[in-house]
Length: 104
Image (cartoon, rainbow, N blue to C red; front, side, top):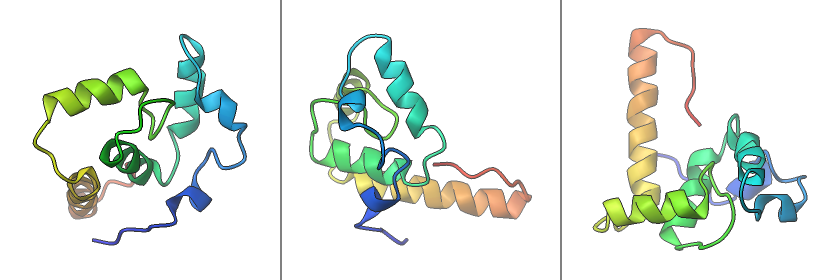
């Protein structure tokens, strides 16, 4: 498992106005759309979950979605580890089956 600690430099939103990621209502869907193809989406989400970031869209999830996830999985001590392990397993299965889609 490789964990990149400088994921923000590779983020799809790096050149986006930060205020556009800290919005409410329907504007959150536009913010989430930026994350869809981001190559560091998993790292971003893990960082937000591990640090209990309360505001903004991170890793394609709103604060409400992250709070719900944290409530459903209160015993997770490292979201970075959990999400990276899941992504690694997905990639391993993808290689074994020959599919070309990558999860972000």
